Length: 618
Image (cartoon, rainbow, N blue to C red; front, side, top):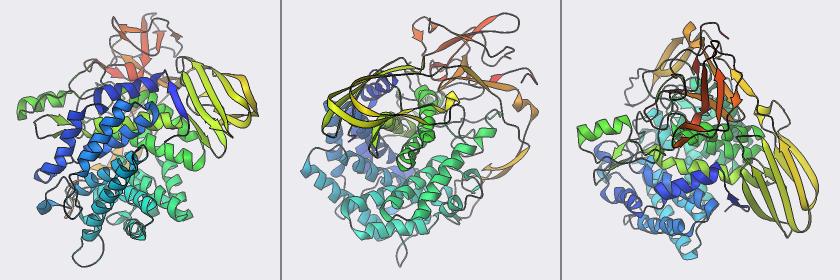
């Protein structure tokens, strides 16, 4: 677990405790997920129920590493022991029947069982249980390796699916390398090498493309954002074990390429549901489908966490913060609503109406939350769940992990959360207390107390949104009872759509002799009306229109981007926001914008991050 013990009182703490209460501390829900591995229903509809347990266990383990909530730990431990009992006599662990295994999303689901167990090992206090988990992991992966790979009676890993040229299956790379790290058994590293040699996708070597860095990820030919990023998470683990510099370069190139071409104003990817599609330039196009999937957001946050650990670049912390305060927190279903698609399927299919703790997709131009339950699958008792709900705990988990951390001998303050961080440095017990209302304001008072004088460098992040380029301010001194204050002015910033003419994206119709699911090339052309928008930001927060706040989000906003922060944070009586800013249009009529995460949480109100403006207003 993190060597820094954090006790926060801000939004990260709120998110972690919300997830504990609404999701992680629910033994009945965990039992349903384990039963998927007993009943093995996924082959009947090429389903992915099997991913739910491992996704949520990874997130639960990360959240526990922050909260140290013993009740949650006992629940996690109980479901781990339950999952161990699903292993068959030959080690096989699958949510697919043997007759239908290694097809569709089978390996993807098995990946998550492995990952969930591996992340739990990081918090496990029981040495005997740790050994049982490693036996379980080895049995599960040994069975996979006996069936997948090169050689007679084996299936190539990219053939063990009918989706996305196999990248969902090859993303098992990460837990494979992690198991090698745990055991030192070379056969697991050899299997990881085999996966990398496939190129990650059938006929498309995504790793070489990233290393060469001549085209961007949306141009690779396989555009599924979440699965591709998962493959690069695995490649980074492989680099750590082998030291092959080429793969470090490929991972860094990929991260910068995604940042350059895909990240939206709310910190996610994809205006075509979950696909890379040159989102950065196309954020204001009108789509009939959902956009900005939370699975992509959280995977990007996790990847940025690993990139920070690799490079020490504050850029990746800036990215995590943008995602956290906008796309991520906006997904929390605090008003306890049901998505439109779930209500429809409840009526059509007879599924038990099930309350999801989180939303799955987010609008950029005028639109609504709560449109669809991402990764919807019906469980054995006719309740349902979704992949996006399962992944979310990992988001706040990695955010808390990087908030205050020790890297290469320096103490980093990456995120500004009211509360304290406790750690030992050279034998001294140190408490770093932060007093702040960030991101409402940029004022942060830090009080560093040590039980004896101790010398270290404190690196305090300078957010990129300040316009300053230094990344961190270093304070190198001997500490015992010291104060540091930073105050980052939060001016309102206006962003306008980028100009472009034509592009080729892989979001079009798809037909392939082997794969049923994918996206083909599509020529897209810029429309002048896509330029008639403006997005306003303040600090790390994207401001959004909420139609309850004096002006309909889908109306035209003719105004100067000069506003005043309000002390009153009500959206409507009983519903508050984090930040509320007052504006006036050119006719003097008042309206308000709020932080994106707070907008439209009733799932019935039209909201917009990109505000429609009169043509050529910019």
